[in-house]
Length: 281
Image (spheres, rainbow, N blue to C red):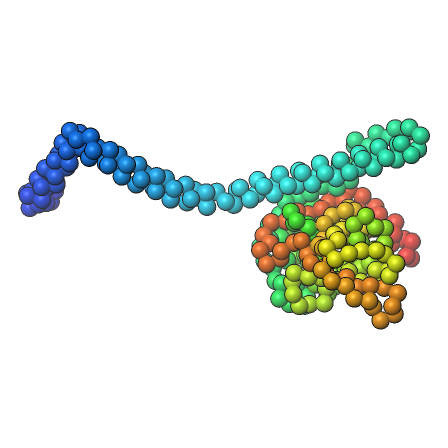
């Protein structure tokens, strides 16, 4: 307290000056319309700038939760889209079969589980991703991984809380894909180089396509449902035996900025894998 009084007495003239200056400004503003309008305009500008800065700050701090909410919503939409496709296929089959009505409302085969990438590489020949979901989240090897724009890869292994993913940008990755609206398919492979592109090989020569056509998953595996986006044809070349084409595919998924993904869970994957492994034996 003694120091406070000492400070006041020591700087009394400055405090008095600031007080009188403040009072003078208030009197001028309150008694002059022009000065009052200028003051209000300046105050509004300062306040607006302050709110803009604080608003940007709060928006940045809430970005993580916003992204998580968005990925959950995308997962729900993917789930609904797949249900609609199943319903359309069912309706088409019903018409063709002469009106037989089969209720498949409980046959929800695929689920989409949001996850975040916590480690990744795109510059190697064998790239890998690490996700923040693992066995405790019901994640298992051979589950598909997709982004909001296209396929990403396949779960290779899991621990309790994390998953290791083989992405499209890995020479060990192979998935049968096809030109949209075509029944012909070929393996999707990556040979290194530009992470924006991969290749669809062994596509029969008779299959018609054009540069710009969309490549989608074929559904001929227990990993991905049919019709998921992969990329677009940017170029092609004929293979050495002259019976097949190799398509250069520009990926929809941008791996250089990828951070949020969804894991595709197939309800009947283990049953299908078990059956197919028994057939091989």
